Amino acid sequence: MYRQVGLTSRKSARRHIASVTTRKLSGSGDGRQSLFKVTTLPNGLRVATDGPPGHFSALGLYVDAGSRYEGTSFTGLSHMMDRLAYQTTKGYSAGDMQSKLSQLGGNYMCVSSRESIIYQAAVFNKDVAAMFELLSATVRWAEVTPDELQIQKETAEYEIGEIWRKPDLILPELLHTAAYQKNTLGLPLLCPDDRLPAIRREDVLDYRATFYRPERIVAAFVGIDHDAAVDLAMKQFGDMPKGNTPVQTTVSQYTGGVMSMGQMEVDHVPNQPDLAHIYIAFEGLSINDPDIYALATLQTLLGGGGSFSAGGPGKGMYSRLYTSVLNRYGFLETCAAFNHSYTDSGLFGVMVACLPSHASLVPAIICSQLAYCMSKFTGGLSKTEVQRAKNQLRSSLLMNLESKMVELEDLGRQVQVSGKKIAVDEMCEKIDRLTVADIVNVARRIFKGQAHNVGTGNSGPTIVMQGEEGIFGDVLEECRKYGLSGK
Image (cartoon, rainbow, N blue to C red; front, side, top):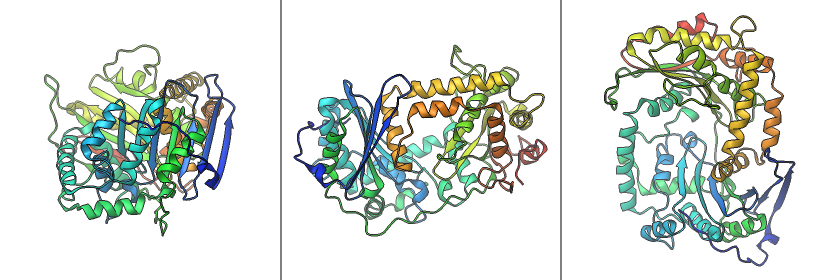
C-alpha cells in the first residue's frame, strides 16, 4: 500500500538533529546482533530504527492519540481517523493515493486503538521513500473533503452495525466501558451511532490539530539505515511546528462493574445453537509494570480457546483452560484467558461462550480455576506447567517477531510509550527467571483487586454478560465465594 522514495542524499539534514540516543542490543533472541537507534528531531518527532536489512522493509507512523484522550468534545473521532486514512491530501487526490499505494504492493494499513493511531506499511527497499511520502501525506496533509467524510460516516455506520451483531467483537468493547465507567479507557473505541450524524469536517480538523503534533509522533523503520530514516523524517516533518500547548491527559480510573446485555440480535451460524457469553475480568497491569512478564506467563498457562482445534505442538492444548475446562465440559464452546495492557492500567480475565442451558454452572467453573492460581496447595500451579507456559510464551514471542510488521509495531509502540526498546533477549531472560511463586503472587495481586492498590484490596471484578436475563446467576457472589473480589 505504500511506496518509497529512493534513499538518496538529503545533504546534511542530520546536522539539525537535536539529540541522538543509540542502544546496542546484545542480541535479538535468535542469534543475530541488532542495533536500535532513536533520534529526536528539533520539533520533538522521534525516529526509531531496528532490525537487519533484507529484501523488504517495514515503516510506520505512530500518533499518540486514541479514544482514551477524546473526552466529550472528540467522541468517536479516533474511529473516524482510521476510516479517513489514505484519502485526498495536499498533492494527491484520493484516486492518485490509492493508485500509488497499489503500485507499491498494497501492503498498508491504518488502525485506531485506545492509546494510538497507527499508519504502517511494508515495501521493497527501493520503495521506502515513496511509501513514507504517502504515509506522511495522509498523516500531515489530509484534506478531509466533505464527500469523503460523508462516505466514511456511512461506512462506519454499517461497520458498527455489523460489530454489534457479533458478541465476540462487541463484548470486549463493552467490558472496557464497564471497567472504566465514563473515563479514559472506558470511552468508546467505536463511534456511537448517535454521534455519527453530528461529526463535521471542522471536528476532524480540530482533532488533528490537537493530537497530530510532531512531539506526539514516532516514525519507526525496520530494515532501514538509521541515517537514511532520519533524512526521510526531516524531509517530510522537519518543518512541522510543535503544538502551542500540551495535551491534557487523565489517569485512568478502574471502577469495575456489571453489565448485562440480555438477548442481542446476533448473526446465526447455520446448524449451530445460539450461545450465551460471559466475560469476568479484573484490573490488570500497565505495560511498564515489573510483573507484566509474570502476568503474560499466567495468561499463557491458563490459555484456552475453542472446543474444536486441529491440535498439534504449541497450540496450548495442555493449558489449564483446555485440560480442566474445555475437555471436561461439553457445553462450553469457547473458554480463553485474555490480557489487555495499557500505559497506566489493564484488564485480565477469562471469557466463555456456552450453551444457555448450562450457563448457571459457568461462574463457579471459571472462578475455581482462577482461585487455584492463587493456591500453594492441592490444585495449585506446578513447576512443570509453569515451565511449559514460559517455554510457550518465549516461543510465541520469538515467532511473532519473525514478522517485520509485528517487529515494526513493537518498535513504534515501545518508543511511543517509554522512549526506548527492550531487547527480545532481555524479555526472554526475564521470562526465564520467573518462578512458581512469582506467578502465584501476580495471580493474588490481580484476583484480590490489588493491581494498583496493593494492600487495600478495593477493586472489584468487571462482569459483562450476554444472554437471557439472570441466566448466569449471581456472578459477583460467586467471585466473592472463591476470594476473587477486592470488595
